[in-house]
Image 1 (cartoon, rainbow, N blue to C red):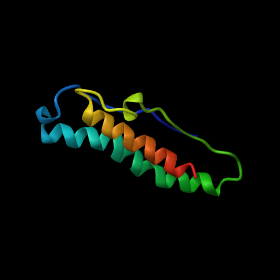
Image 2: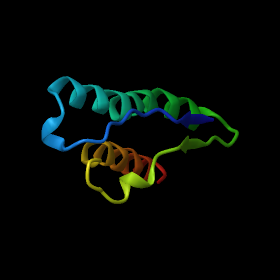
Image 3: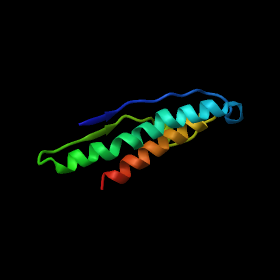
Image 4: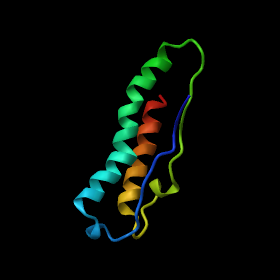
Length: 87
């Protein structure tokens, strides 16, 4: 079983984010999950027993709201990646 519950966020106007914060939020919220999934999936596929991936994301990935555009975008990425690998 693979459980993802990682995430960082900050509520402010998008143009107020530093380049470092943009990179940090994308790295923590997206890159870490996307990078860990391939080896985990490979092991799950080889197993004869059932496996599960649990991605605890956020409703913010469904709808961007004021002050949450960057966070919402990263959570939308996680939701769509999870949906895509489910097939």
